[in-house]
Image 1 (tube, helix red, strand yellow):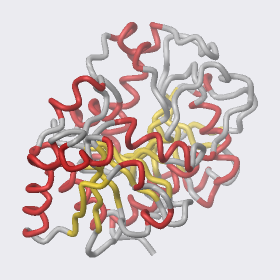
Image 2 (image 1 turned 30 degrees about the vertical axis):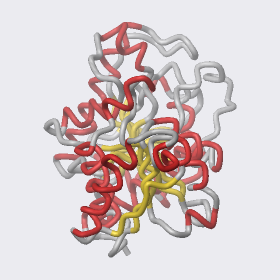
Image 3 (image 1 turned 60 degrees about the vertical axis):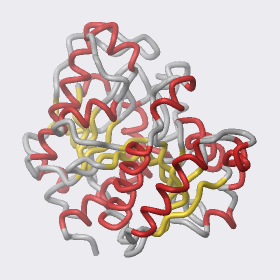
Length: 332
């Protein structure tokens, strides 16, 4: 990890648990992993030791004693559990500012605290389904995919949904050969570049129960998934499938692949949230910089009560620092 280029954390929705988990993460990490919190210092939990800095390079000298903060003024106070519409524009501006700092080389990676899409839609006319799509737009409308990672599991689990924030009824139309190929290619690139896996093994889940069971439960597998995977294998990729999704995530199955591709959101997120609910990390593939996020939402129901678990935020910061260092060529 390059101390002169720390991870930058965008504050996310200030009425949620983002400020709390950031403060708790700093308490555990301190100088071991200096990071900079970008947001309004008035939104941090009361009593959080923090110091406003003017340059990200100052973080390493500050982090042992205080949370380094790059201040960004918000128009309204943060009331736990009650997002203020007038703050929505600042939440979006913080994300854009954080991306600009990473792209300028001042930060090694970006870690985003959770946003609340409904609050952003209502307060700022936010036109994106979520963080991932907004970040792709900021990066120049690049193709992206969402990987959920738990390296605390043995074997580890990395899972990528090909379709993300769409209704289940839309999945069979959106899940196309072109999209599956793109998702597999983005995943293989990330496994090579960011995880250092020389020949990534990628397992692909079927769309239908039992991977279609020879056409008895669906035809997508036989009609186009099998031919596509054969083509990718011929091109040199170590791909397998389509596999029944219900037998793809137990330990013996995970030992046979480095990442699993799923057809839709819940097919991918249910296993990782079941196996490692507190420690999963969201990683965006395809961006020209490293972006991670804790794999949880704003949790308005417990915001401001001191009960938020920072485990996923800490894992997201550690993953961001490690992958960012690899991108910069400074990994140990």
